[in-house]
Image (cartoon, one colour):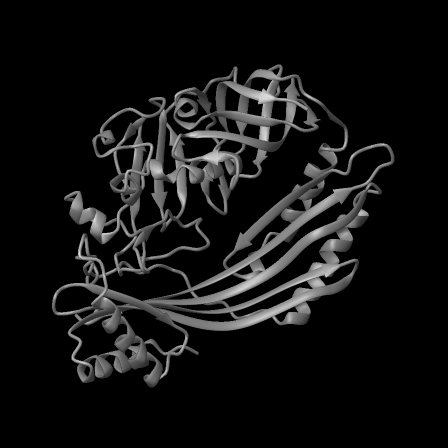
Length: 446
């Protein structure tokens, strides 16, 4: 059990002994259990209890040193402060990070809490029973090569030498299945599903099973697709994964480093169709991994990124906010360099209903459920992508699985080729988003 007040006391006493007047510490303690099964038997069981902190020290010249440690007793914290102090004399002298101006502001409380860990035998029995249900659902589903059931309890904290002290507790549960078919004369086909929740009792295991069974069987009767231009409908998961591949568009650090599709002058300019809006909302009640502050102690908040097609906001750390004369947004990850990461997306639209954009009524439309190889098929600095995908060719509500194909395009052009944003949002682990219809995208078939 990590005692934050004790860590703060060790840091305060050690800093005086070491003549350190300015420091901050971000840390987390994680208790995690994860299991996998295979053919009705436990395959892998992992359990861990780990803690670590990142320590930053500013010397009298204003330079900063950074170190990390997993040794959180009095000696370990003193050694980390000393190491960071020594490193500060070799630190960068340009754009040195500082304390967040909001590190001491009051944070509005949230309803998150730590849930009691579920006993491991119950987790194993649950996953074995779920695997059995999946295998018995169809004679052509022969295996579940990838599966998992996990639970995490996380204790995060931030403190600094000006007596800021923040902490929060999170609980996270997840279940995952990837099933595989085998039929004579046909290629093996597979599909996956994942569900998350804040505690085991509310984990939608049945929903996960229904989804993976339906998807798997829908891919059995597959056909090749003719290469060409298609209207494409992105599932919420697929569209959010594409947005996540091009976060440099609204990442202030990337923009300042000139590693972005945007520039400082892009704010206030149109980058997408006028009926699309995008937010980053760490505190959304549907976000299982809700965080109320970032690693600099800045409170998180709902940040407007795109409003009716206009780029209106960026994600900031303390340093990027100061350089661009604005406020930090609660997206900082500290380390040898402060990085910026998004939390939880929310895509909305003010578009009127378009009854012609209905998968039960259209012809020759590609519905993409999942994009693959995002690590290799995206050039985020050029804005281009070429990605294999899982999906179907849709004709009047008839879904035919696509054998093997890739989708290619330019992300900024895609944002301006959206023809419809459906009204019904779907909740995913990465954010809230409806289905997105995009015109005239290139599909290369087998």
